[in-house]
Image 1 (cartoon, each protein chain N blue to C red):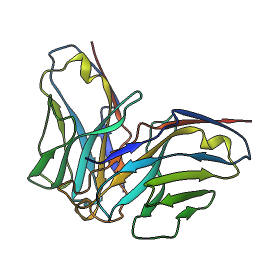
Image 2 (image 1 turned 45 degrees about the horizontal axis):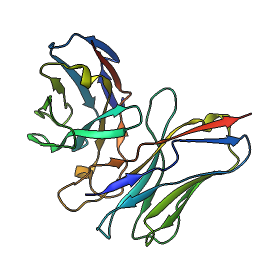
Image 3 (image 1 turned 90 degrees about the horizontal axis):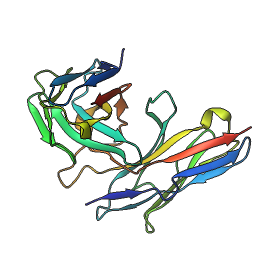
Length: 117
Length: 115
C-alpha cells in the first residue's frame, strides 16, 4: 500500500526567509501525481502545487517550488520569501490512477508552519 | 459556480443518534469523496464515488454509509454516532473520474462532535 510521510510535525520560519518542508512516499507505481495542499486556520484546503511523476522538471508556482527526487521518493516543498499569510498546516498528498485506487488521495499527517514577523 | 458545498458547518450529536452530512457540487465532476481529519492523522478517505450509482469504500469506512443518486450530490450518513466519529469531515470532487493531474476541490468542512 502507498504511504506518505511528513517527518516534521512543526516548522517555524522568519518572515522573508526560505523554508523547506519534507515529504517522502512509498509506492511501487511508476506513474503517479504528487500534491501539496495548504490548510489555513479557516480550514479550507487549498492546492499549492502539483507534480506529475513522469515530468523530470520540478514544478514552481510563484514563491512555491518543489524538489522532486523520484528515485529517492522524495517531494519537498520550498517556500521563498515567506509571508505571514503562509502560516498554515501543509499536507503532502499522493495519487495514482492504477491499482484500483482511481482518484483517491493519500495524505501525510501534515506539517504546521508558523511564520515569525 | 458555488464549487463544493457542505452542510451543516457544525453539528453536535449524542451517542447513538443518526444524521446525514450533505455535500453538493455544481461543476459536473464525476468523482466525489469523503475524508475525515483528526489531529495528527492528516485526512483519511472514508468513501468515494466515480460516478452516479457507483460507490466504494476507502480507508476508514466503518460506521458510515453513502449513496450517489445524482452527479451533484454525495451525502454521508452516520447510522449510529459514536464518540470516535468526532472529527472534521471534508467532501471533495474531481473532474474526469478522478484520473489525471486534476486537483481535488474541497468543501469547507463540517465539524462534528459526538458526546
